[in-house]
Length: 361
Ligand SMILES: NC(=O)c1ccc[n+]([C@@H]2O[C@H](COP(=O)([O-])OP(=O)(O)OC[C@H]3O[C@@H](n4cnc5c(N)ncnc54)[C@H](O)[C@@H]3O)[C@@H](O)[C@H]2O)c1
Ligand SMILES: [Zn+2]
Ligand SMILES: [Zn+2]
Image 1 (cartoon, rainbow, N blue to C red):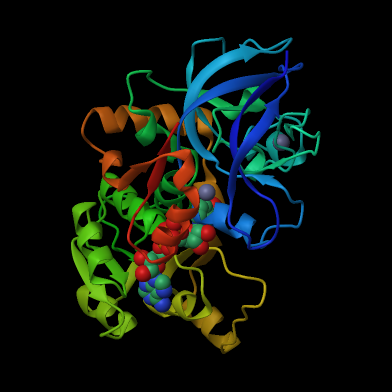
Image 2 (cartoon, rainbow, N blue to C red):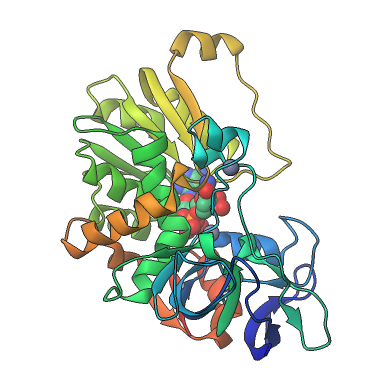
């Protein structure tokens, strides 16, 4: 029987989100219904609400979630009712060209549920990133469910489902940060601080945090930054060079995603260093710079989608590291809120007051 539960939807561009009744179908072949326990508020949810992703309104928001499998459809054997899972938006297909070449992190045919969740009048919902977890329950593909240790706090585990994984992976997977590398991270929100935590885990030193907000810099130190630069007061490129013996950093991560921060990342590298762009630019942004600089600085200019993660490989490992006290994932949870508070959380996020607000369902 389809079930009626509560969910937070964005009905039209820019309008405040609403908590309303939604309908979850029984899971079909390959599908799973998950009872959501916690779901973090990510910038991308706000971008959906503002029409910045596409115009397939109404959206069912929320995508950084953990919960318990309630029921499974035909042919699902990877999870069963009662399993504690983190939801992911990279259920790789195993069949596309990228998967067959051994690069499943670039899979371009990732799985989502086939059936649609709806409003009570039958209007189909577009779930954010194929998840939609600001809700009591959600319908996803079985491959979107990654089992992790059930004793983990769901508010912490769920964050691996998007921003924290994106940041850690930007450093460790895309940037290939390893012990002894010098690393700078521009923009110390949830994603940038996760990159800092990842760089620390990998043994980088120094780890230089750059932001314009002193509070963010304090949090960055708490997560592993060895030095901080307030970009509102100091030239970030010069300061990064000074802190790295005049050379520049081996890996510079742009976790803001603006032309000016990307240029800082480009010029703050050591010769042949890496730039990793993990912040998401808007369609209007343009870069203009001397082409000769690309040539003469050498190195690698990379972008990082979802931290080049493979959920089945990375989520359980990161949960283990958290439990061993080697990765302070709990520090990303600034506040715990309810489904009623998502709109308010967008404002808190916009004002830069949190690393993550997490909805406890
Ligand atoms: N690539 C991915 O897969 C992926 C996944 C999730 C999020 N993201 C993106 O990562 C970015 C960061 O996300 P977040 O949740 O950390 O956002 P956030 O708003 O919490 O953090 C951004 C930080 O950048 C700082 N900042 C802004 N302009 C700056 C400047 N000019 N110089 C220095 N610091 C500056 C802000 O003070 C803030 O601390 C967003 O663009 C988000 O969409 C990417
Ligand atoms: Zn594939
Ligand atoms: Zn996200």
